[in-house]
Length: 262
Ligand SMILES: Nc1ncnc2c1ncn2[C@@H]1O[C@@H](CSCCNC[C@@H]2Cc3ccc([N+](=O)[O-])cc3CN2)[C@@H](O)[C@H]1O
Image 1 (tube, rainbow, N blue to C red):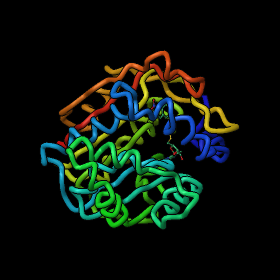
Image 2 (cartoon, helix red, strand yellow; image 1 turned 135 degrees about the vertical axis):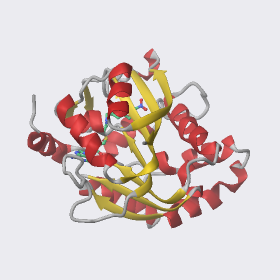
Image 3 (cartoon, rainbow, N blue to C red; image 1 turned 135 degrees about the horizontal axis):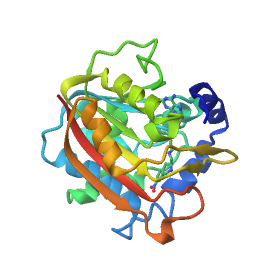
């Protein structure tokens, strides 16, 4: 079992472009098929925001990686979104999109799909503009630290989103539970946690590197989040269809969780 320092070392080989290719291009990002995993993830976030119950000044996304699909629905409900990741290569991938770098990943199919859910596909460029205005920071984070944003000090935020981070970063369940507590310290009481994660995954590829994942099951996730001081509002599971098992990982299912900090 790797120690957290060793996990950090293996992440030095993480390749954002390969990761994006593996998970955020077809076949996993097929917007023609409503049963595909990426549309399912986008619908989960859109559904959480559709009630209007989740809103506020700041949403913090923890372990963003090189992706921002996870905050498209949120951008109309917060004044400020802070993205964060451990690796500079991932933070730079996000900044490339923010400054309209021609080499940036194209998130427009994602923005169009989310706008389409509200019948506003024709206004997707307004949402893209709003997204760039709302994502106001891209900072370093390390969920193994008591203050994951150290040395930055952020007032407790209204909502935290995190996707595929805890189970991929922590070397064991004890450190996962500690990391969740670290993340939770950044969230206001009454604030919302929106989490996507992998179930029963043991590894994934991101270019030349094979990274370990803690295999989680639904019951463990629900128990751990509840024990961390949350009321679970929503828990959904997507079982990976065989055609989406493309050799980049051994993920069996993906979960979506909305929880409120007690
Ligand atoms: N100490 C740390 N603190 C915070 N973040 C850290 C730390 N160390 C690394 N990181 C940061 O955390 C990482 C987050 S990406 C983790 C990938 N997880 C596995 C992968 C994801 C995935 C995606 C999509 C789908 N699908 O079916 O659509 C399935 C799957 C399942 N496989 C990475 O950004 C790293 O840079």
